[in-house]
Length: 197
Image (cartoon, rainbow, N blue to C red; front, side, top):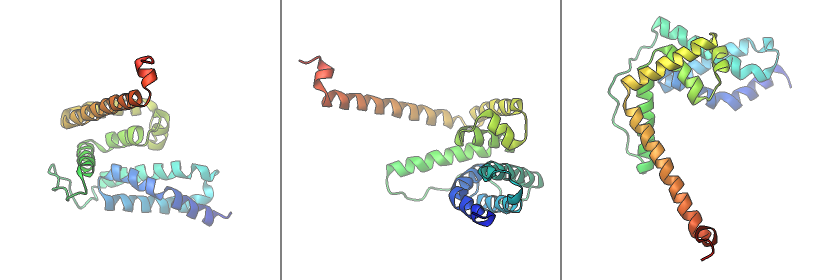
């Protein structure tokens, strides 16, 4: 397989995941697509220098982070985020509305963080990266990742207390689901639940 074909396969396989991460970094769908496009263009230029194409995703994510930091520094974003969120569109059902509300709450909370804090949380908790991977992607020391994570979480608690309610509701829902599962198991296996009575 030649380099162009490998790059095409990489883009097809990873573009959606890169756009999701970029959205969390930028807070805007269109800016996220621009960020991914720019990062992929730089990855394409450096493709021949990659010793192992398996490292292409890490390389692209690092390029995305550095491009986003450059954009933040230059304040090139023409739009500004507001504290007010638009009214949600009508949805197909209550589950969809809850999901939209949750996403809007998380998005609003991330928008209140500094760029570095937002990037750390995106890599650590949304992409489930280790501290070492996050440090490598951001080009910083592990201690910086730890301190920025701690500061970001403290700031989130201060500026977005609604996240605590969201977390409590999610935990309560998980506990209720577990109890429902236990009830179903008891209904399905009366011998195990009642001791054979």
